[in-house]
Image 1 (cartoon, rainbow, N blue to C red):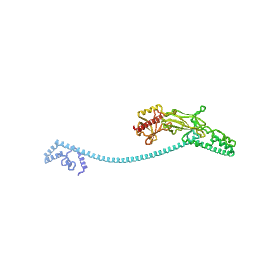
Image 2: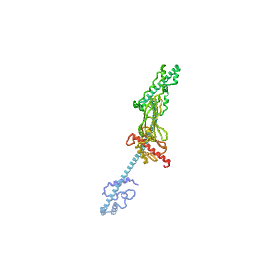
Image 3: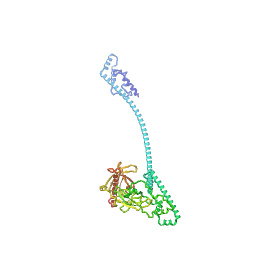
Image 4: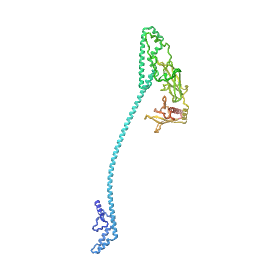
Length: 536
């Protein structure tokens, strides 16, 4: 088999000859008839060269006549046309072969470049995979770190909450202890509370020393004058001596009411017409009874003869409740102190329809805000007056709303009745989610037989269930827009209506809270009654 590149060189050399150059048949290359030199025929018809060769062979012979005849045949225009046509076709074939060879070389170059690019692409993919793995690893590390930080923050928040609760309990207990002895710090900080505790300590220490000194003097006097002192002490003890001897045990009397707060009467009751109205908010001075008595041999009889009659117990006159007893309004208990009353113990009480009494948790101050829990009940306040010696007077009770049941105002009642008649109510409230410390805007939908809680931002349904006896609504005491819904499974759902009323006003937010609570309780009551009767 002949080398194709060798054939190409021959073809190129043949292309360098002049197109009109004639060659003798003996000098014609063998590749004329077999172009590729591998035995394959180039054309199926005889070429112009072969025709000329045959004509020359026929015309070959000695003599000039044959040469002339050859020239005539050679100069035949048809043969020359065929010859030129074949030469042009051969040149075209050579050009095409050259183009094919160039294309083949280019193809090889392109394949080589393709392999190089594929190798580079593979390397880039491997690098990209490595970068992605590194990014995923770093992301996982960051998420793990954030999770640990969140858990640590949650733990610290819980610890802080526990500490704050303990601090609140400690501060409340200490303030209650100081209030029992009529010591009220002007500011709620550590310095003023500590100063008050220090003052109470010195005061009690002085009382103990005074009492011990009094006992020593009494024993001394009894030893010197047994007949007179025994008779006087046994038959008619003075109130002053009783007061002096009962001071160390005053704490036991005051502690009979641990659940109440104590208030100086000049702060929380009205004075008579010739006295100023209560406006002060600072510590009351110690009573004059706390001053040490002068005890001596000659003055001992006067010590037992002071205040021979029993003093009247502390009391309050004109005790009343000021304010309109409607949900959202504030009531105030006030009166006139008598017989040395300086402290009062307050407790607001609900009288239910079944005749039972319900002490309102946290309502131990003269002011009270009426809530939805007070509707359809009798609301009263109990007041126990006390003096500086720890003596308690008779309990005074006063009912709000002229001892009638608490009702809603007309506008609130009409709005609630509108929801009840339509059988559906929808309110925009704020819900405190378990997984977050922020209030989430929520839609509370109340129906006749069920209720639904849906988060407004994500449209996620938090709770959707029918009314049950285990459903409970808790309303805090005081000016608050919050309430807690305890669902069927015992989950606590804190709600808030702050900023949800139109137009926005704090009293309107409190009013909206009470409307939601009363509407939901009405639907719950009707649903439970229907279940009992077999309607639902």
